[in-house]
Image (cartoon, rainbow, N blue to C red; front, side, top):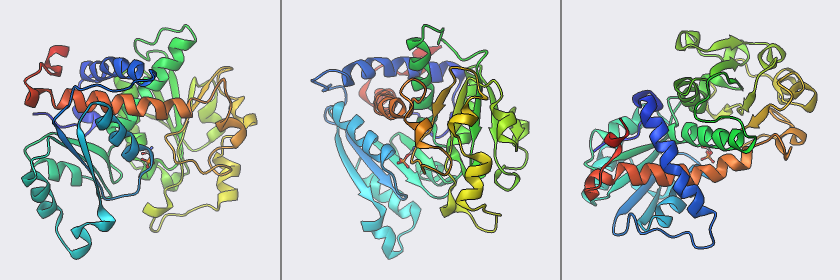
Length: 320
Ligand code: CP
């Protein structure tokens, strides 16, 4: 079987395959009757060791709409609190014969460790500061739909410039999006205060900025990220007011981007800090709620594709 651990482990054609597969689930989710029986009889465990609203709920909804039995393990109420190790937790989940395990964990690499101990596909729902692959896939799908809606070619993102601004240092979303957007042909600018920009990130092909106005100039898409204060230790942290002054996306700042530039945010948003409500709620430019909608479809596609070999159905090897 295959796992979904990182965008960095996917080929471009596999990314496109997952995006294409998700389209049928976008259509299904827009109908009154949203039920498929594709994963009927399968058991999916969502094991979340960190807080989540969007990712946990959308994986749960995705599994249920595909007809699977979905069980959520909340770490706060689990035996992890009694000192059980991550590996023992993984072996325990495996013994229950789950057909897929979705994991969010605060440590980079923890999901890969669990994947090495279990017999079923493992999907990374965010590991530390490493990767959040389904977020990057849903962002790509939301972008594809927004461009399609404008009659622009959305087969890939060649020629598109995307500016990602925020706490890049701690952001698994930024890392996964950088890899995914570049794989699909986009140019990516990363913008953060110097203390919140990872060393050596330019070697991954990104253009690095510390001046937000310069990073915005003429870009086609602006993706805003929150300050992840829960992961900060020792960095210089600007006050919310200071941060907003330098890096907050206001209506005036957005005018520096291309005239019809799209606005994205993975959530959760801190309104008035990294993004103003006036921008977040712009009906013609902000695709933040569309990102959430695409999250369910992408997670349905990932669960379907990754469980295919166990179900004897042709998998994404067919994508080549
Ligand atoms: N974007 C995202 O991962 O949100 P949650 O933390 O609410 O899952």
